[in-house]
Length: 257
Length: 240
Ligand SMILES: Nc1ncnc2c1ncn2[C@@H]1O[C@H](COP(=O)(O)OP(=O)(O)OP(=O)(O)O)[C@@H](O)[C@H]1O
Ligand SMILES: [Mg+2]
Image (tube, rainbow over all chains, first blue to last red; front, side, top):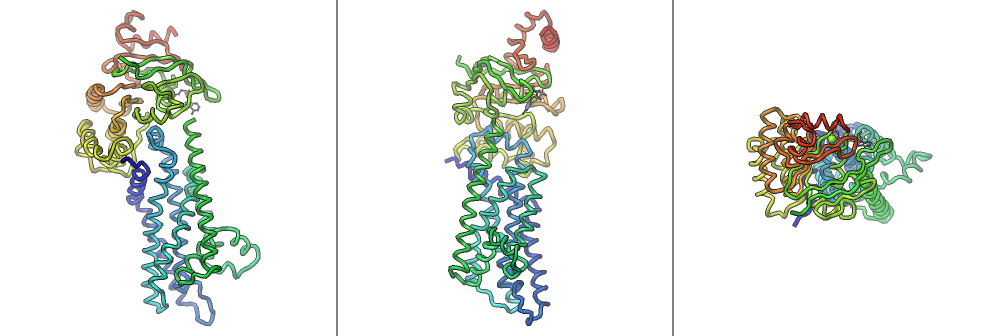
């Protein structure tokens, strides 16, 4: 049986695995942040009551932080192909629009999963060093629970990669990376600041991604803390994935006009 | 013999330019035809329409009986294209590139054999595990062409296949094209007259999006009273 989606997914996975930037952004960078923030956390006096960088909170934040870079790769994969003639050749092949979108998505989901496993393994080590308890079961639950969020970020990347060119797409991604970091509640307690920032963060899906990750790691599967945010994230992922497929299909038809 | 390609009043109009202006051609199965013409004559645009990469503004084109617009799914399974620009996956090795392309057209069990055949046919043995981005321009081009034939198309479109090849590599590729020709219909564009002379059964001369002349080399020579394709081409272009 010919499976063109899997063939294309394999090609994309190989291409990424041979690009050293993948390792720097998707693995090394989140790990470096994990270590730095853990050091920062160690210097915060207990009386301050600031727990955001404590490993049980930090691990979830790092997981979502990492996913924003998977989004960047998602965008780059598409723009790189679009800027060369290789995609033209594939457009002349029997590949359909869904083979392309599926083939771009699948390997990135793999990358995102591997990334979170590495980040959580490192988090576990940090928890041992710092003496903060972290449950392995919670980490495993977290690794699974953040998959919808990964899909969401990959979809955003694909949309940017399809709509914008090689020069503009990374810029758009960095806006989301910053936005995710600020209103996603990764690096500070956005719900505590109130005002416009808090409103904005509640209107965007990123905060919910972080909440899902943090709650799952703490094995807190309550409705408000886990389920509701998970529903928001999953809903966003579904909508954005549909949009990504729509935009790519439209782009392909336009290119073949 | 049946027809591989039949076009009828094929037109491609861009905003301010008619790239292909009502061409009606027939290419018999098993033939190698050369599409000649100066820069901007409309050769690539014609090939793009015949390979479903671009929709005709008007007119029709059938490839092995299938309409390029209405039955593009069928057409895509039957044609291979080597674009004017080299088109390979840069981070994949020669073998991986070929395997990938083969997997889009052939059932799993035939991929391995097809890849070996292509590697041998184009003398790519010593580069098989080399990444495409580390190949020289000429070898990359050969890989790009090998990727066009690996799906065993019935019709192969070669848009300036020998662009950027040295004299020896060009001659070598001619031999390889002669070999491929035994198995498929080929449409080739080139700016090298001696290439068309050496390879083509039939020649189409395009000028400003129109077919200015077509026939075998001897037919065109008889019609223009010139010898050699270069002289013939110049004469046709001047008279048009
Ligand atoms: N997408 C496009 N939009 C507008 N004009 C186009 C487009 N593609 C091609 N053209 C124009 O159509 C004409 C024919 O182009 P085409 O690429 O078919 O020529 P060609 O015969 O292949 O030339 P060359 O020998 O330089 O490759 C040119 O004038 C070109 O500028
Ligand atoms: Mg051309």
